Length: 439
Image 1 (spheres, rainbow, N blue to C red):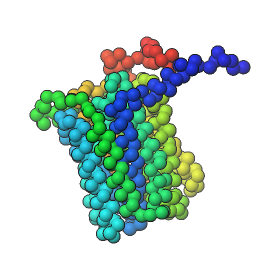
Image 2 (tube, rainbow, N blue to C red):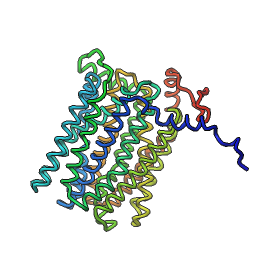
Image 3 (tube, rainbow, N blue to C red):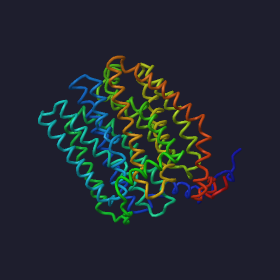
Image 4 (spheres, helix red, strand yellow):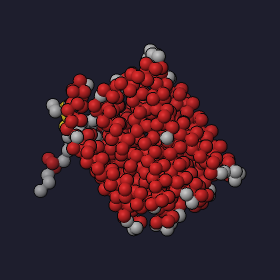
């Protein structure tokens, strides 16, 4: 029988709860967190509305993949150069410029759609412009977060909260977009996204950031230094490779969702919102799990398990024609993908030298979002010939092979990570005591 002695002391419980949100104790990060929450919500609303607009105008899964590719693919080419710029720049000022340009892009897209001037080629151009801006936005969000927290040991928590913000927007945004599409139009959704950028711009204007302007080395030398670091580091190179493979294969489901919503499950914008919202709910669950973690130790095992979960869920989704089961499998897929991606991001930001942070995080963004865009393009092309169900089943099977390969190589990765953790003074944490213990 459970006794009162079994209950954790109130002070300890409160300490654990507060530690899950400790990065928000830094006022600068707290304002940035709130501003990004609004901006990312608008981004997801626009993404869903844009996919629906493309499929409504063209009935083409290939074009769906093309739009997804152009909105993220520039990161594959620009990431090394963007990383150098981020390492040299005033990150707050650069973020203000990028957010302002993204606001202009969203308003222009809303105006063209409202005036019925939108054409498929216009959407492709808008997606390409957004892709260039995304090349800066995603790594900047990661790099700036670590700069805004008051204590270095709060950086992993800030990363987890960043993922929570992104995936909370991913959970709320698609169903909200489906509702807005049913009540209004794609143009209204684009306008809502434009308005959402005001929040993060105001937040950035209200905070002071410490100056981090390292000595500028020649551009070519900086580029070589970044690539040589990645090539010479077994953990960094291995983690970036598994992120690229995971997102190339698993994220191929995303541009296919309008086709599944309309042609497989015989629904409309509400079905599209439900499917994407289910994946978002899983991603949100993974983010909440990572926020409650007390240490970076053990995250490699989380990555291995999450990769296997994502592979099995993707295969199951491709095989089912029941909408409720599809939503459940998308929940598991979203959980697996974000648990893997965010855990990798946390490990990287923990072990990266400050002077290389921008360059390596830009490569991480390319491996994440850029590889997802390339996977979406390939999936769209294959789906035109083989059908969306067969395409995602093949992607899930390949991902299962990749996940098993990572799992069997886990100890080799850990052997190279342990000295890095030891050098940083990171040991296992006993959650119930809140104290460090030897690994």
